[in-house]
Length: 214
Image 1 (cartoon, rainbow, N blue to C red):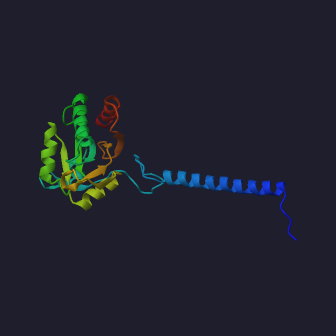
Image 2: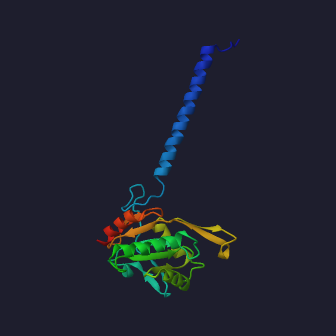
């Protein structure tokens, strides 16, 4: 005949259940940390968590003249600041390009100090002519690039830039493009050096530009 469990037995059972829950929570937290650690990272060297990964690298897109733009030739030996955006962008893109133009003037080494490279993540609307007209609005030399959807997507991926279309009835064509807003800085050897964040002040940004143009 079964007997009713005493208070001490019930307490031990409750403790076992609680410790089991604690253990499961700890495992879940560890898994979350591992997932975050393995997520995309911006680094200047091959990431040991992603064997063989190197941010940047040579690419071919289309210039504002409609001709192929080969970075291995056009940017060889030149430091450059690279920004991904689109011409229908209402604020972030014009503000970023305007800031880069301003910083280059403040650097005091002329327009040739470093190249400003603008890559459109909206090739469906941003033809070479549209991109050319757009970069011409900033009153300083800016390399404007576009290409096919596949080409742009591949370059964005190798440069760790997020980009995705988002429906927007008020935007031309009925959509806008979400994209990473950081500026990528590359040295004369074509290797990634650092980033300039959208909210970063002029002083630290200038220090970074001095380093790649030294």
